Image (cartoon, rainbow, N blue to C red):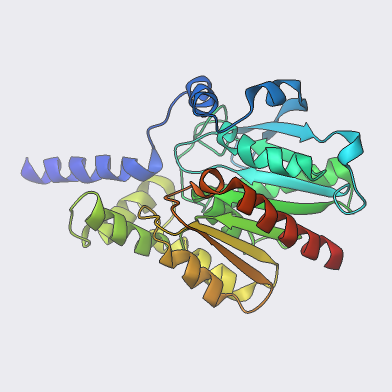
Length: 299
């Protein structure tokens, strides 16, 4: 009986990754609006369409395309499409604060709910492993609707940042990437979090990885954005809060150091996890604008 109890406990522990707790889409939108992290009036007035894309795994991805005002279009931004990827336990509405910046710069913006989040279909969360294929499907849709000359910019937050980096390992149709508070390696992240927040021994990680493989078909070792970054020449802007203890700031530094060239790093003072844009929006906008101007000029 004790063996079954332990197995059941380990099974439930794997749910922390595979089946994260999350608010409904409506509640999450209200939280973002109430905290002033999105301009609800501007969002409601924005030129937007809602649609779904069927993933290669059978579920639908809930998507939203926002278009900038015509007077904001420029020669550089007119062909650009920004795809925003939210983090673990969140939904696409948390990315509206980033969309506001891109729309002001004249870019089209595509937001979508990752699998098992928001209004998208249910499937185990995989911390970037399967999510990268969904992102590839989103890019397929962009090329189909905007033509082969469109320039794709992917921008992710937290797990979304890991997703956009992991995606570079299977698809090079990206002009540049913005990775905000990405983890460099899932096993190293779990070692940090299991000690810091759960006070559990790290030997549980390989056990949980095996259970996750049995349930969802991927190993924790398969999720290492660091290994992808070492090999890509696509320009990447790394952003991280200087006092992030959930995904340690050192992970952004590891990613930056691993990349050979075409890289920028921006560390934000006083910002915890996923707080960089909130702590210094002006600085965030300027760094993003400078990065995009350089990349799009060279593209």
